[in-house]
Length: 343
Image (cartoon, rainbow, N blue to C red; front, side, top):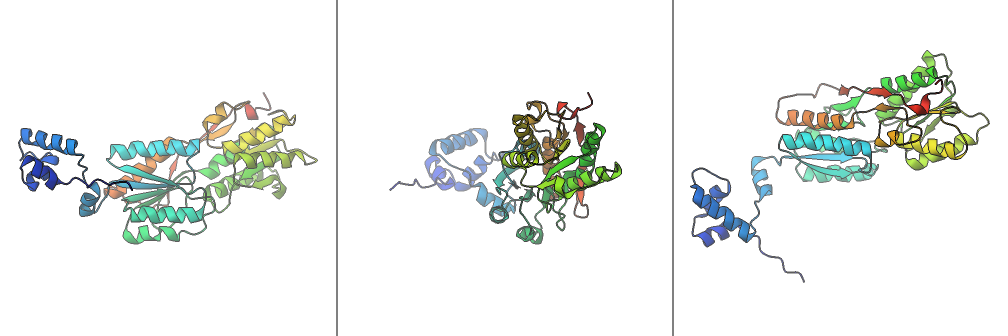
């Protein structure tokens, strides 16, 4: 059985140095009332004895933990890694730490994560919803307790909780209009769960672009899946079975778009001559795929940074966003070789 050493306290340090516990406590906090020589002795003894400052107890007294909780669908995503880097930068600059968890695209896991964050007494919570989340009730304790809650990327429209997103409708409209401008009129759309606002808006942008260019919308050209690499390949296999191939594909993320493109190429389809393909997010892989992928630049780092800054502004009472639905970040259409049919 492993022996657990007793935690060192300020009383242990006080006995070792023959000082009062109050003097040791002040010295550890660099209180100028304690002379510098004594402060150095206290610090040296604390270090030697393995003393650990009990930040949890201190935070309980202050009614804050200086931590922000973050729940994301998955960590193995270039987009989410960039967003988290932006959050960490903003949080660190403001003196906050991040506690990060992933839902693995499961509402059940997301619910458990939210409970853990609540019980860990985070000062605020940033959330990108899982793929299959249908209820927001697990976030109700945060609202009831007055803990700031902000959604990013996958927004919710949840009460008293702002979101930080891009204009997904406009971005999709632009990319589909670009495909039409390159001569495409039979355009497949691979999208995600329509209960997630970002995919719903991209789908609506796709339909509006077709409508404005007098191209009939067809249900059979829409694939709804989880937008994974595997689903991208599966969509390509399904497309290849059809008697008439599409001349354009718009996938709602780059991973799915590139997987679809690779499978089509392996089956002799020329990109973009036979089928032009566009994605979404401007992940790093979009620049190394062959041909390079046309996509929408979704500024993930800036998204994360803005989300953390906005939440911290709420925590410091310098901003009140409860009556605002969303903050919209700018996006950009990036045209690359995968859609240049007219070149």
